[in-house]
Image (cartoon, rainbow over all chains, first blue to last red; front, top):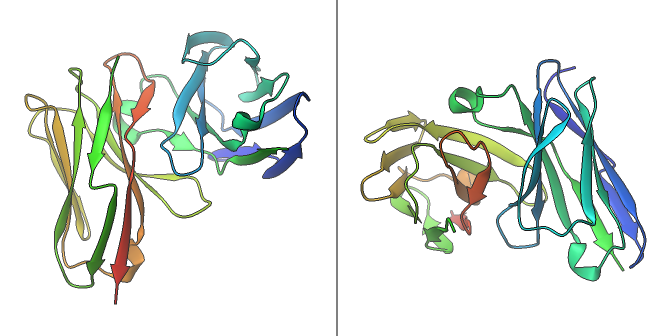
Length: 115
Length: 111
């Protein structure tokens, strides 16, 4: 498998619910980052995982949490969802340090709508 | 706090014309990225600029970086309709590998 794959592509949830978004990255992608992109805005950094440990976090509340697994897959969990959580969620993966050469490889994203 | 600003936010231009998108950032950084995003789609990496004076070109697009001025430009030459998209610049503080994106420039090429 090459590149970065996200699932599901679209999701509708009710305010207050919990959701898990998934990202599968290719072998060797030991760094994964998650971004939130609200409509009409640039992506905002949520957090990064490196070798299964959180390696930095943006300005997002604790109800946004994540996991990274040994098989280069990762999850973004959002608890107690709010209407403002409606956005495109993007996963970016790569070998640590390689982004200097190749840039970040982004997945196709999950469009989350909270109603 | 690192801030990244792009201008213009919206750009409508005729095919065959030239134009430049500007990206200003507030904190010293040696790494700047340009991405393209089509409506409803993910981000496509265009350029990685790693040093002062770096210039890269791909087709009708050329990007440059001036770290002293904290400015990057994306120049479009003889625009064609296929270049219609939103363009983002993003900055990565050295060793951080966490991107701060600009506001985006929505480019529309009119036949």
